[in-house]
Image (cartoon, rainbow, N blue to C red; front, side):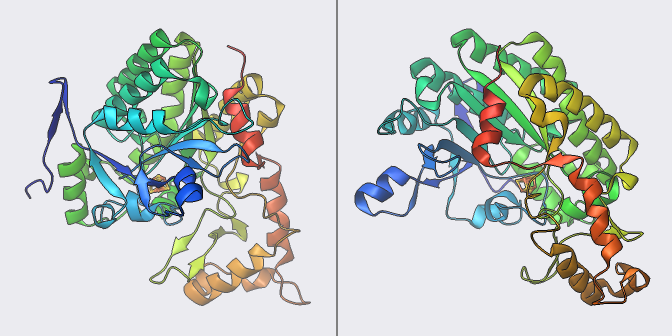
Length: 391
Ligand code: SF4
């Protein structure tokens, strides 16, 4: 299959094929009523006033069912998305960044957040991203409060040592140009065991066309990676980044549970038809009873490292969506109903249902074990703690 895109050369240094998802700019929206997606860097309502500066990359190696960015992340969709643009020009981003006015009544925005898609998708993405970060940090890092948060699935970085070495080089370059800037890379872990990883990321049975397209666009062979390999890279990324953090005072890694109450969706044909959680022995599959050995080890190493670096909240692992706890919202009942409809008795074991109301109380009780291992807080508290460590 021939490549559907052309290659660019920037300053003769490297070829690149990097895609961004353009963003709405709240400044423009307020000033002129324009609501189009036209900016690379833009202000997003996150963390409360004065909000964050954000940059979104397009394209990803995974295909998570609950992906908030599936239209520009999934490889079989993203090129059709009008927000997606192929970028070859660092100066365009620097100009967008410099064009952002300081917030009124505040000294800076909350932080700069880099998200996806997958911002560390291959060498070109890493080089491009850091060349941009280096340039904007040279010019004005105060505007983003000297704090950068990069959100990744870590697959590319965990896959090969040379990939994390490239990241180390670029982090070091950034440190050399501006020692005030702190960077935190947050790896979203896509399950506590291979079965869950496979279900969340839909990494089994991807079509040959899709995999060939991925290779032609992003240059590495996803087809050669089993679900088990990918889960391994997802976890290993944290250890690779931890090594880098031992050498670089401007950098800290972290992880977040990218599964759980509101994240472990399984899409069926219609996106309205979702089963929220899968079950085994009447417990959610991310219950500690089913954690794989490598996830257990990650949990223990992470909480020990993170509680010292980011504060006591991190005695547990952060989790997306855990706010919908069992007492506030009957998600377990809804999931059970959906599970019974879609998978029949394969996922729903009626013998556990209580006599009164068929609520499956033992299942709901089992969520307490999970709430004891993970935390959820508002974005401001969470992201601030990721950039406020003492170097
Ligand atoms: S890793 Fe993130 S961007 Fe990629 S498909 Fe999953 S949720 Fe979407």
